[in-house]
Image 1: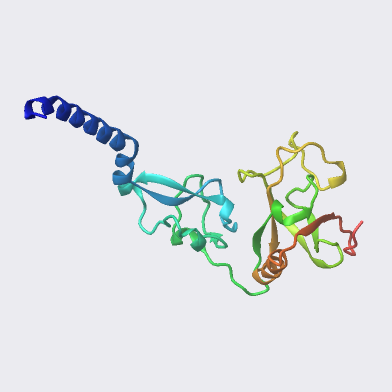
Image 2: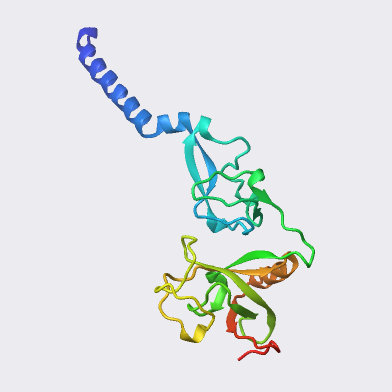
Length: 219
């Protein structure tokens, strides 16, 4: 083919390549060059709460807007299990300064999460402030009795009565504001580790709401 006849084809090829390059730049190239991701919290987290994997996500920012020391994708494990040092707001980037490590002495207690996936049985009437007894899946062995600090849905929002009522009588509760995705119990690291060892065996928990009188007996 003569050079003169090649010119139209070369022109078309150049236009196609230019259009493809522009499309790549607008759809992927700009983001890859100008942005990077950081680990952020997807929900409101109060100071003192334990950070769980479900609270975290990655968010893209312009590179200059990523805070110094922010956790990057793949570093989520550095935050999971730590306590929030301050109130964390949805979308906030995480770094070591925002977190503190729970003390492992028996006297030091904090909030520890248990997913609904790890519970073979629990009542949807569970609320913050309840006392629960954790049993093995066959209900043969008691793993302990604990106070519930938080009850959350799959978006990390607290679950309450739909009409806003408060109260400890779980036998008279009505419709809730959502389905339970996890509960957080008040305990220490050693006790929580024992619960995790059972869950990872693998087995699931039976969570029973209990009402205590002065003698601490269940009704």
